[in-house]
Image (cartoon, rainbow, N blue to C red; front, side, top):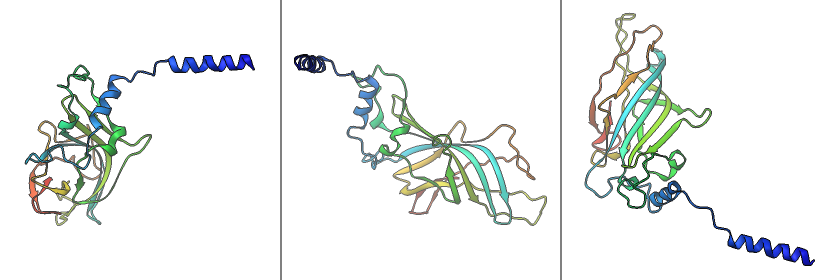
Length: 228
């Protein structure tokens, strides 16, 4: 019993004298950024200015064009980019030396995310093989990149009077579901707003081209933000 008691005392003494594991600067930074963060507040909340979200889309494939139901299906990478000052640390005395981007995909439900939706969308889904296909990356300046791989089934009013030599114009109408234009504004990316995968082909159709516009629509609220 004496030996067991002594061994127990030595074990307890070792436990008390051991240093707790050091928390990395990355972990401390993450705790600091999210400590008082409110995901329900826009990055520009209270500043009398809308939050600007840049949108870029790469069409990977148009898998079907259904002239009977007047719809088409597109596989795409949807990228949204905005600045969130609450996630900026480049000028922070404690963390300013940490220059790597933060991958915050696992913190999706703790961050403010734009409520983008496809106005003419009929149904869609995000890929989940082998993991959910989305990514959130934040730079030291607070610039957030949110990328998703999705498939959308979109309505398209087609005119078939010149079939089979007809030319169809199909929208991909994007907007905010709940915010007004003075709260949230979607704008197309200046460099590559809409691109197509190399050598992309559509059965029975020529390779598509794109036209980019920005409008102020009235769905679901007056002056809602939209890009087409």
